[in-house]
Image (cartoon, rainbow, N blue to C red; front, side, top):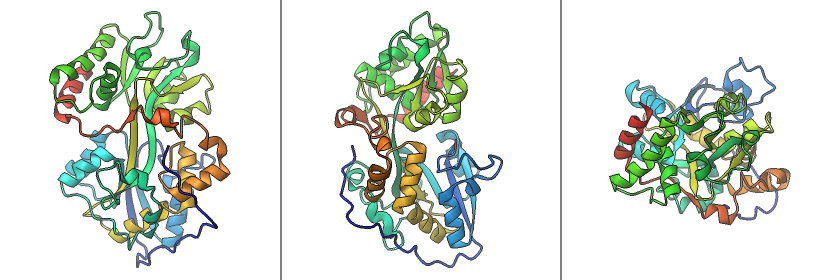
Length: 362
C-alpha cells in the first residue's frame, strides 16, 4: 500500500500558474475507454472533454479547448507520435514507454515552479521509478494486472495463473490474453522466471504456454479495456481473461458474475504517467493541465471513478475519508502481502519478447 502521509487541516488548492492561453488548444493523448472521470449520465455522443468534470473545469478556468484522442495499444500510440508525427501536449502512458520517449528525446522537463502541485505526489513512487522527483513524468494512476473471469463458468474460484494457463478441457469458452508482450511476463512469473532474464530459452518456455492454449483452441488475443471485458466476458465469448484491475471493477458494476483476482504467483503493478512532450504546441497549457490533475479533489475524483490507486498523498486522504469502501477494497488498494507479489514490468528484453509475441499472434 502506498505510504500515507497524514494531511492535516483543510485542503488549500494552489492557484494555477498564470499563463496567457487566450483561446488556446490543449492536445491530449490518453488510453482508450475513457481513462478520465467521465460522467456516464451525459450524452455519450458528446466529446469526452464535455463529459469529464476535470476536463470541463480546466477548459473553463483557462478559456481554452481540449482536443482529446485515445489509443488502444502501445503500438497505436507510438504510431501516432512517431510515424504520423501528431503533435500532442500531454501523453498519458506507461513507465516503460516513458523510457522510449526519453531515448528519443521526446519529453520536456516538468518544472516544480510551474507545476507546484507536484508536492502532493507520493514520494513512495518516486523511489521505485526511474525518474525520481518527476522531472520528466508525473504518476497519474496505479493499478494491477490480474485475471477477470465468469464465476458461473468455473466450479471453484480462480486463484492464480495456473487457472489461466491450464483451464479445464470442459470449459465452453476460450481464455483471453492481452495483446502485449507483457503477457509473456505474466507467464514467466507463473513459471518462476525472472521477467528481466536475457535467457531466450526461458522466455521460450513462457511462449510455449500460449502455444499450448492455441493448439487446444483455448486462446484469444484481446485488448484489455473495460468495453472488451463487458463485451467478451458478459456475453460468454470468453470465460477468463488477463485484465486491468480498474477495467474489471468497472465492468463488474453491470455484471455480478464477473470476478477479479490478483494471481497468487505474482503479477504486474503498473504506474501510468502524465508526460509533457518536448515539441508540445502549447507547453505552458500542458504544465497547467498536469497541475490541475494534481489538485487533490480532481485526482481523487479520477481515481475513484476509474477504481485505481491514487499516487497523491492529499488525494488519498480524500479517498480514505469520503470513499472508505473504495479504500478498503483489496482489488484497488492492495495489502502489503499482495504488494510483495507485484512487479513493475520494466527492464525486460523487449526485442526478444516482441519476436516471440509476434509469432504467437500468427
